[in-house]
Image 1 (cartoon, rainbow, N blue to C red):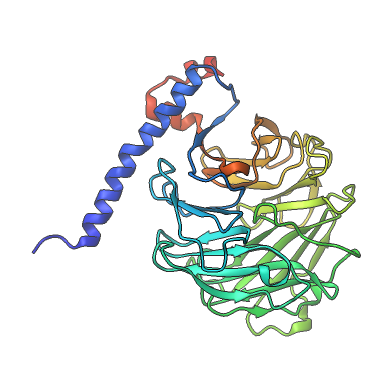
Image 2: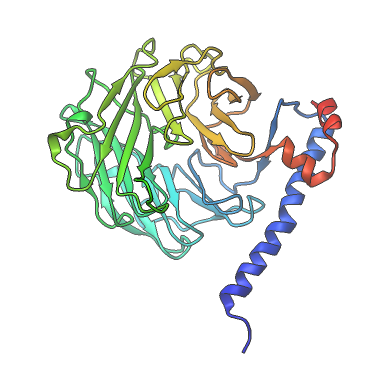
Amino acid sequence: MGQPAVIVYRRARHNMRQKLLPRIGCGVAFVLLLGTVTLAHAQWQMQTSGTSASLRGIHAVDAMDAWASGAGGTIVRTEDGGQHWQACSVPQGAERLDFRSIWAWDTQHAMAMSSGPGKQSRLYSTHDGCRTWRLVFTNPDADGFWDGLQFDGTRFGVVLGDPVHGSFTLFATYDGGNHWTRQLDPCLRTMEAQQGAFAASNQSMDVLPIRKVGDPAGSATDHQVWFGASGGWLYSLQLTPLRMIDAQSGCVHLQPLSALHGDGAGIFAVAFHDGDNGVAVGGDYTMPRSGDDSAAYTTDGKVWHVAQGPPAGYRSTVAWNEGEQAWIAAGPTGSDISHDGGKTWKPLDRGNWNALGLPFIVGPDGRIARLISWGQLRANNGIPGNKLRRLR
């Protein structure tokens, strides 16, 4: 008998990855040698998405497989590191929906969330690589508006929505999105009148598994949820199955960016790269070039500090780059990088961006790019470090 099909498929994918990564690096090196843009540490390589829709959702399963989503029911995906982006079928009845969030487990299984008033906020799932979609959950609140969808990498996930009757909306699933339960936690009560979260990048919220000593990865049942809101507020609460509603376990209300006021100002994105080190970014999207009070950071998961050297403008998205050991933030006036845990930021580019799902970034008019680090350029092209410094 021949080899099992799955083994042949995996070997073929491995060979394709080995061939494609050097090509990606060579293409960026060529751009750098032309002197198009000089950056301190990394370069965005533009890709062709095949759509002109505004993209606000992006999730990278790994360096090769990623999904992106946006306006007009748009969902696209890649299996080759962005060399080719394929259009997905539009879920039935979703032609006018704005898919602000996308989450994928692999090349076949993904969930997309639309944002809009009332029933325009919906969740769809696919199990066949986006050939078909199934509607799994619709916003039950006529006055509601969903802002974000996050999973912890397993079957646990959370949907965050704007306040209804004075409390932020939070739904949780423990079975991969088949069933969702409203969380009635006092910690969700708003700290200000007319407060809301932001659906700019699907990063208004981050979910952290709470693992007990000896627990294997992916087995956590307790989770800490952090989310940002208008007025520069951060909320945090602990979700534990069967916990008493009034326990308020892990409940935190902080205002690290207290100088932000107005409907368009606040914390737009929050992210952690471990249980202690996190960054929150935002600003006022009506003044996109103002970087005042646009970032805060924590090194212990408790106390937050305003960035001493903030990003160059309002930022809607932030993510940890393991390869650079740095934070990257982005917004409509460009992207920035921080190598000191979010204390200070340096400009990376001046592009128009909405959301990060490293190594990818997306923006309006179908913009998609891939981040290529200097270390990867050096490894892929055999360029000595001193020559890279001269190119910078």
